[in-house]
Structures are given as C-alpha cells and as structure tokens.
Length: 457
Image (cartoon, rainbow, N blue to C red; front, side, top):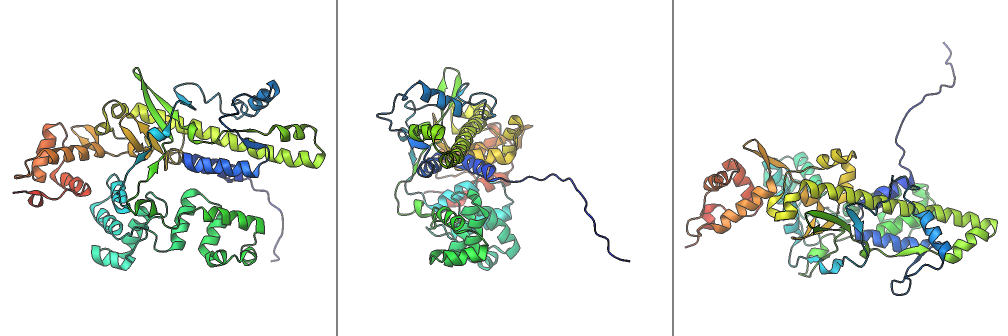
C-alpha cells in the first residue's frame, strides 16, 4: 500500500507568551526599586520619554501637552475598566516619605533570615529537619557548602528527598540562595525574575564564553543575533552572584516599602509608594517630530511610542493589581492592622485569588519581594499568608500560636521553665487547642530550647 499525502487543518488553542505579556508579568513581580531601575533604563533607550526634574517641572508646557498626556494615560484606553487613581487606594507623591519608614535589620545573618521563612512554611517534620540542616550549611554568601550526599547522611534521608527539600529552600528569599555553584545561583535568579529563555540558555551552557566576551561563539551556538545576546548579557550582569552578601558584614540593609497602609477614621487606606519611582513625561521635541517628521523618523518614533505606551500600561496594571491584592489582605487581616502582629488570621494565596477572581500565581507575583509599611512597622507582604491550625472548630494562624508560645516562655519562671505539655495547657486556657507535639514542633522552629535546657539557677 502506497503512503498517501494530504493536508489537514486542525484547530487548537494554546497560550502564547508574547514579549509584551512577558514584560507585564515581569513588571508585576518587580519591587519598587527594581521597577525604578527599569524605568530609568527605558528612558535611556526611548527618545520619546524623558525624566522630569521635580524642582523645576511643576507645570506642563501648554494645554496641548496636557491633552497629549491625557490621551496616553487614559485608563479606558488601557482596557482597565476605569481609573486606578480613585477609591480606597492611591499613589501619592509628596505625602508618603519611604525613608521615614525604611526598616533596617542589622546583624541578621542569611541563615537567620532563611530560618524565619522556614518557620512559616508548612512541612512534614522530616522535611523540616532536612531544610534546617541545609540552611545551617549555607555560608555568608548564600551558597550551600554541603553536598546532597552529606546532607542525606547527616539527616538519615535519601538523596532524592534531600534534592526535593533543597528545591524548596532555593525558592526562599533572596533569589539564588542555597545554590551549589555560581551557575546554579544565576539560573535560580533568572528563573525567579522570568528572564528570557536565551539568558537561561547562556547561563546553563555558555557562562564561560560570556565571561570571556566570546559573543560570536554564543551567537553561533544559540542561533541568536548579536543584539539578542547583548540584551541577554545585560540582564545576566544585573543578577547577584552573592545572594547572601547583603546579610554579611554586620551592615544595615535598608528596605524601601512598596506599599503603606494608613488608618483614617475607621477605615484603612492603601498607598502605593510612587515617591520611589522616577517621574517621566513625553519629550515635547520628539512628540512634534512624530507629528511632522519624515516617513522614516515617524516610523521609528511610532514603534517607540507603542513600546512606551505598553510600559505605562504595564506599570498602571501593576498598580491596580497590587492595590487590589493589598486591599483584600487588609480586609481579611483587619485585626492585624488594628491590634498588631499577634492577630494574624489564617489566609492563603488562593483565598485572595478567589475573592479577586484572578490566578494564585498573579497574587504571588503581586506580593513577591515587596514590603508594606504598617502602623506596627515594615513587614514582607508574604507574611500575611499563613496556614491555619484547627482549634475548637476554628482556625488559628500558626503565626499567632508561635507568638503566644514566645510570650508564654518569656513570662515563665526561669528557675522552673514550662514543659511542652504545660505550654499546651496554657494555650488551652487561652482558647487555643493544640497537641503537645505541635507545641514541641513550633518551639523548635522558633529556636527555643527544651525546658531542661532553659532552666536557670
């Protein structure tokens, strides 16, 4: 039987990640400092954009300039269904000074920072022990100093189990932590930041060539143009080769909050920190050239205009998404904002995503790497997501139970410290039903010694 040839049309649906969509996702995930850097970079590349000097550029050039800006920043044209500048959220310049609230935690090691994240991560006891050993094996630069085999031997685990837990620890903040070499460190950061596939390929297979400046060889191996390789190089050199460096040396690490929550009467207002972002406007010279220039100039400027418009759309969409997510967090964690850190309620990413009718990953990107300035201090946004423990038919957040255990131990008689069973009884008297084993697990996660080792004569 002879083979038959023919054409067949098949209709399928698939998600295509366009460069524009990739940029929008990347911008949502950025914190305010990273976004500021991106805006400054774009101003250098795009002649249609220019920085506004805050001291001199208070008024627009003329009425026509105002119409121009209104046209390009009209939210109805952005497909956002209304302006993002009204309602309970706002972006205020001049009314919120982040430097008054930047939090600096001196003398905190990278290991302590990772252990604090481990403390609010739901894990089986065995996996938690492995994760703790991995964290304790990380040096001041953020690199894992023990091999998988050594960790497996020390924790009486299989190499496969260690690899699985290691991948979890490598998702902790800062990106790139717990890597075993520079290549893995950069790869973890590139994946976390959503860099282009070419950047990942260069990190995985051509890092030595990149270091030696052998760009032609990389082009030949990857079938990429020189411009694409140089773009990938620029994104790679911005990665941090020593993710733990900010925690070493005992110096102060400053945190610029992306968001502030302020109480006004009985309500809370979410304020985005626009002060930390550069002020930009359309360049009037190139705007006139766009309207009256020659064909080639206009063609180039139209492309740059579209590029700039999409950047502004992505930034505005980021503002709206972060505002909506934070407003939902404030509503669900109202007791925290009224009474303080000891009053966190159980909350998951899915809870917020379902309420806003968006995907869990969108919520995760909106809070990733970002901090919020509250009446009780500056906290990472991810802190507000904490699993619950069943107690008398109600859920109590693990975070709150741990704070209660800390307070009970703080108030105990140092000459007769409480056992885990006695702490469980004390929690029960305060309306929280937890088992002794749960108390022991939380106490260990908090770094509190057993009662026989806390006793002081």
